[in-house]
Image 1 (tube, rainbow, N blue to C red):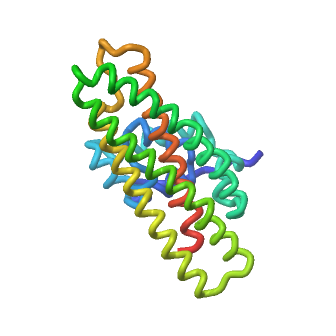
Image 2 (image 1 turned 90 degrees about the vertical axis):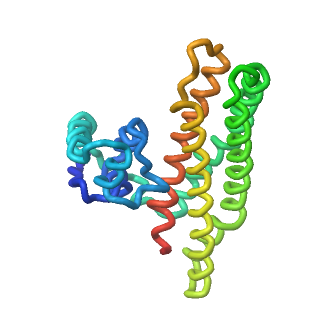
Amino acid sequence: MSVKQPLFNSDTLVKEIVLQFPKAADYFKASKIDFCCGGAKPLREAADERGLEADAVIGDLYKLLEQYPVLEEDTVWNGASSEELIAHIVDKHHRYLREELPLIGQNVTKVFRVHGGDSPHLAEVYQLFNQLKDELLEHTANEETQDFPSILAYEQNGNEESLTALRKSLSNLEEEHDAAGDILKQLRSVTGDFTPPEHACTTYRLTYARLEELEGMTFEHVHLENNILFPRYQ
C-alpha cells in the first residue's frame, strides 16, 4: 500500500492541510482551529486567532504525521466521484443528523428543565440547539431533494446555464454552513468548551458530550462539502 508524504507550512491553507493529511482534523478540533467553514485561511492566521504559534503547530502536525503516515486510502474522498462522495455524505452524515438530533434534543430539554433554575445558561443552550437542529434538518433535506440531484444531473448532461444555477445553490449552501458553524461556536462558548460543572449529573455530562460529538461530525460533514465536493463546480 503506497504512502504519501504531505508537505505543508504556515502559509498553507488549513483546509489544504486536512485534504493532504486527514488526521490533522483531529488535531485542529482539539486546538479549536476551524478547518471547514474557516478553512480557507493560512495556518499562520488560524493559529494566531487561537493564540498559538504557527511553527509549534507545524511541529505538532509533523510529529502526528510520523505516528499516522498518510496511506492512499486515507485521502479516498479527494479522488472519489461526486456520486460516491454524495452517497457517503447522505449515508453517514445526513443519517447521523436524522438519528441523533432528536435524541440530543431530548437530553438538552431534560437538562434545561431540571437544572435551568440554577444554571441560567442552559436556556441559551436550549435555544441555540433547537435553532441548529431545525436549520440542519431543513438543510440536509434540501440537499437530498434539490442540490445533490442538481449536481448529479449536471454530471450527466450539464451545460453552462445549469452550471451557473448550480454555483448559486452551492453558494447558498456554504452560507448555511457558515450559519451552523456560528451557532456551534456559540454553543461551545456558552458551555465553557462543553465542560459540565462539577455537580453535573450523568445526563448533564452526556448532553455536553453529545453536543461536542455533534460539533465534530458537523465539521467533518462541512469539510467534505465545502473543501472537496463544491469546489469541483466553482
